[in-house]
Amino acid sequence: MQYILLSRNIAGLLVLTVLLFAVPGLAAPGVIDNIYDWVFSGAMLSEPRSSVAATSVGNIALFAGGRLQNGSYSDVVDIYNRNSKTWTVSRLSVARSEIGAGSVGNRYALFAGGFDASFKPMTLVDVFDVQTGQWSQIQLNTPRAAPRLLDLGSVAAVVGGLSGDLQYLSKAVDYVDANLTVHSTSLASEYPQLGLPIFDSTSGIGLYTAGYQNSRPGERFNDFEPSNQTTIFATASASLVAGPLFPYPRWGSGGAAANGMFVVGGGHMFGDGSSEPLTTVTDRADVFHAQNQQWGQALTLSVPRDYPLVQTVGDYVVFLAGTQATKALDIFDSRTGTFIVNPRHTPALYTLRDDAAAVTVDGCLLVVAGGTVYQGRNATASVEIFDACKS
Image (spheres, helix red, strand yellow):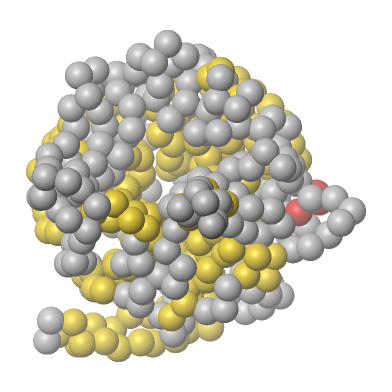
């Protein structure tokens, strides 16, 4: 590994952060480097549903809540153990959808906020302890649905969400530490924003960027538009500061990070419907480099994707779904800074789906679950697993 020491003055305090970057050409430990050797398999959730909240802790993947075919909310949690290759079923304390999911301390899975049956944002956080297999509950300080979670190691940041008031989007940030203590702050961005949460364990920073914002918070009529705001969460200093503006604001992008490269791809823009299309889906991908904390030159996905699922698998950032044009995955190699192009073969989904969940277990097992099929007509219980683990 290469070690790069950065210094920055934040609020009058000199903060030193060590950023780690992988040496190009070396594969991530425990991950099969050749994507054509990844092993595909399938499974089923215990019930079909979309808008599922997903996270992983160690060798455990959890898929919680969501929306059933009839529109009601689920309290089911499907739990997959990579070591035993078995599924078990548990339940949330309250059925809900639009839940924020993440983890903290390599022990606790967090399922934060969401809408209850009366469509009210919640403060509830269901906590699953993977060491004991027990559930507990804590409370956020601000109720919201669809909050974004950043796992910053010893602390998780529950960022933003839908507030249910005139502001509509929340600026709230609740930190949950490894003792499950909650303390709060707020985003310093100009406008409330529902952005993408992307964390990179190599560089030790998280980004909250892109998405959309309300440019008239608190007014009678909201003004929603794509956001260029970026906030940087630093693990070492437990601080959040404004980052460089996202270069190409659009709706519906997705992102993940590997080796200090944060890749945000896909999404759509609205036109006037006459001189330009009402909706245009993009194949653009933007890359933020933790080393210099700047956005770099834009790249291109193989096809335009809207609301893609994006996960990190070893040195790769993997884009899937978000299109009816192909089942193939777009795979970014952080060692070369490019997307892999091979007309012969790329890993692919078996089933096209929307509004699904995806998570990576142990950094090497990519699991895609639930969602809707047949262009949104039916909820599915289908699970697809891409195994890139060496053992």
